[in-house]
Amino acid sequence: IFVLNFVEIFSAFMVLFAVIDIVGSIPIIVDLRSKVGHIQSEKATIVAAVIMIAFLFVGEEILKLIGIDANSFAVAGSFVLFFLALEMILGIRLYKEENPTTASIVPIAFPLIAGAGTMTTILSLRAAYDKVNIIIAIIINVIVVYAVLKSSGKIERLLGVNGLSIIRKIFGVILLAIAVKLFAANVQGLFN
Image 1 (cartoon, helix red, strand yellow):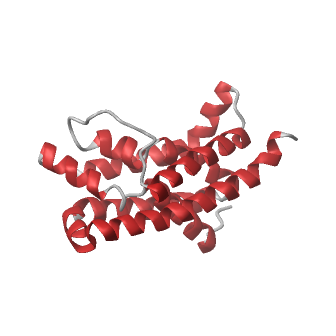
Image 2 (cartoon, helix red, strand yellow; image 1 turned 120 degrees about the horizontal axis):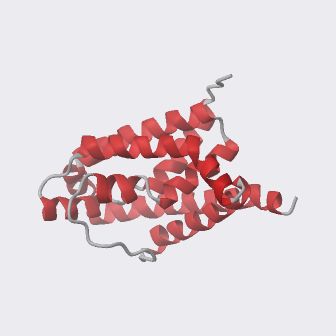
């Protein structure tokens, strides 16, 4: 039975929004646009949505094949979120990626939008929330991502470097709290 829970939808949306960090990625997107000319926003968002929703359904089965339970993955995910949050708060880069050549599916859809952090988060959310609420949260996020991709230049001019930096730090703190909560909720399951 599908149970629409707006608190769950909002929580899942906020978690994914912080992890995807599309606002914090505006400088990267602007930089990509200057390198490759045009970003295919529609293609990038659709591919990212498909990847995320597919992972919501088959992610756990993939883990079972490898022999990892959802609690272990959620705890591992909490570490990934923790380090992502530290990156956002402290303004450091722990994760380095190769230089992109095209800008639609790689690196925007994957790994910028639907990267390792997002996948981990989706599986971790699955342990706590109803699937339908997570799907709605993913769709809302994808709409936001699309809007940001389409208007990244305007947003950058509007907020400026300092504005983007402040927003990134605020979401970093939110993400840090989420990481701690996720760890606390799943760590007991490891020892049962």
